[in-house]
Image 1 (spheres, one colour):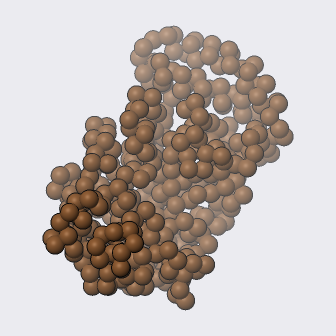
Image 2 (cartoon, rainbow, N blue to C red; image 1 turned 90 degrees about the vertical axis):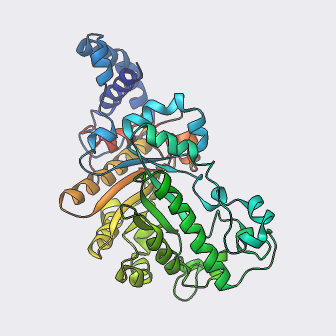
Length: 405
């Protein structure tokens, strides 16, 4: 019945916005809200007439993102452990729409590094910190059960990597180790994490965010490499990101693609390309992950997609890895604008893929608005009741959502 409910909701949404033949957004909430109320019974009746109430038609329901883009590129979603612990509530929406998952937190160093085990055996762990994988086990099991793949996010990041990992005695406020020691710890950590998946779950991890957010002119050195609050920079030095790619290539399976992942890529495209040039020349990196934490004010085609094309032309595969598009007000016009922006992202990326550009996937950063790190901006495809929004129709390239740009 959930599939039928989804079909009904989509039909209602399409009816509610179907009158928007021109790319002009409505003013305020009244008219669209009233129209939705008026067409609810009509939409339900229409669906019932078409399905005849048969279970076969109920199962068919409406096509989801996964089906629509199955011949184009993977569609992923970031999910936290809290979703997996209540999976009955979310399962059908996930399975109908996504064929790849990213752990929102559970594969970050904060979760995989084992402080207690490392401190307990410092003689043997000094160069080789202990790791554990209990935090990401539910995600692994879910992916395997539903024939999904996993994006591994992330190995080396200045944030969500514990301070103790960089100290002599594995304490939060200890003395920082030397470059040589930290390089050994970096190599062993990368080897352990990639090795764990290689040996136990071959083929599960298809993409790895090797380095996250290393370039930031406002918080960086003269070359734009992030210095502020960055223990990797403090211990290893400004080439830490290059070293991470060298180790990742050494230990990654052949079917793992290695990504550099960052925010605001359309504003620092040249910086990213310049800083990654050596790693790219040496074959240590495969792609760029564009996070895409956007808003309805952002120019999709003329800035975001242009940056994407620049990365592709430089020889990188590209994925959108953390897509969400925030709205600034709770109004029908704002949500229509959001829907049009989502449509622009999916439409232009699909077109680039069909033109031969190496566009390799889109991941939505969260399942529903109340689960988003930007929840006050309602940035996702499903609302707080897990019902599809106009944004969902935009991602489906539904004709009821006008094109933009």
